[in-house]
Image 1 (cartoon, rainbow, N blue to C red):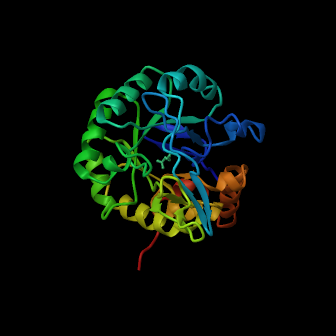
Image 2 (image 1 turned 90 degrees about the vertical axis):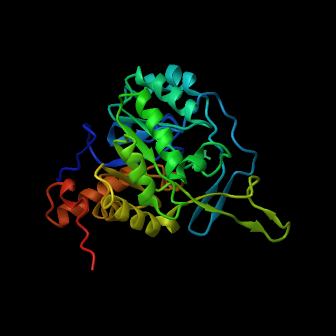
Length: 303
Ligand code: SIN
């Protein structure tokens, strides 16, 4: 069987598949389906300084090739996470990426500082949530703000720092270069694309927040394009995500330049999706006589 292990920022992953932040909670619901140790890693739901109740409902809507969400970073707050969720996650023999967010630079730095004294393996700083008015997209759509918040979090922690980027920008490579310069050890992309649907009978937007983030198979080509461009623009590793549904999608994203792959919406339609993807990657590599998944990273040959 092919070797699926990868190393990102000095951290060993047994395989490159990581359920994305926000679709996997803290893993408890999925433990009923399979041992979490089968996963390369787990990105936890975005955690802020204080508990957040999130946006008003409806905040999820299906679309033909995906889903719109405007959850608004609902979470129990960093202290609760550290005391009640992280200890359980750290027993699971998989890499734990604590996803963090905040309404201000100071809040992001404070959350990172609290995590610095825990055993969490990596921090993923979300500067790309389209569903909150402060922080979120505001950080991720300006090079200056992206650099400022990354530098503050970098100062607050020695943990490997991944910065999660927004696709809702003119040039994602400019933002990637800004966070690399500010001390990010890796970038992850893409977060959701800002979208909107309207119920034509009520004339109301389907989401109470009017707009929300689009994820799912429909955004996969955008993810491939942005991962490819970013991997060619920065020296730090890129973690790819956005509409991955199959092992072949994950292979494609890695050929575009991703060192690992997060799986988002697919786990809502099939909780086993990450496990199936791992098996499908094995099948592809074995069928093509590729001994290590590392050998496919960035191997796309553009015309
Ligand atoms: C949310 O909680 O609104 C989703 C987080 C995100 O898209 O970054």
